[in-house]
Image (cartoon, rainbow, N blue to C red; front, top):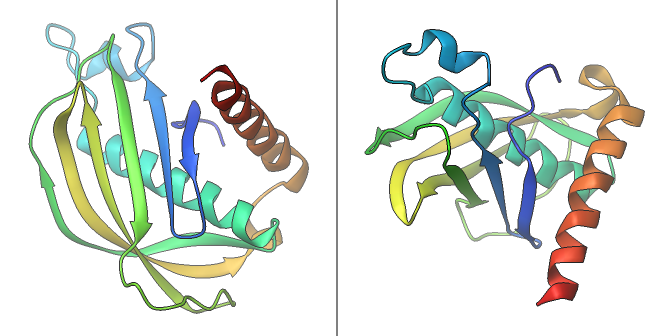
Length: 159
């Protein structure tokens, strides 16, 4: 991944995941979007949700599967988020029935983004479950997930 939009995992279980993106003024996107009033584009909020969904299934499937978005439903954007803030994102399985993880099945994840307890966006992303090896480099993705999980476990030990 050239642009990584998940810096921290806050919580993960069998049906949901929560993560964060720390927004810094020196990120490339803020030079152009917009020079006098930098803000995170809505498309990158959605991309962060997609990446968090992939992290979720990588962990659940031990890197057997990944996700490819196929549709976006009911997306609404409420507040802009600017550099210096933390974008917190939660994803959960949209329907409560048991999900069968297998190639070409569709999984629907509800996503919500917040900063400072203000809702930025919400919506539902439908994903096609794909073979991990077709889209990703396992070594790099495993190192990234290990980093996120070790930081999550370290944070839990501090509490």
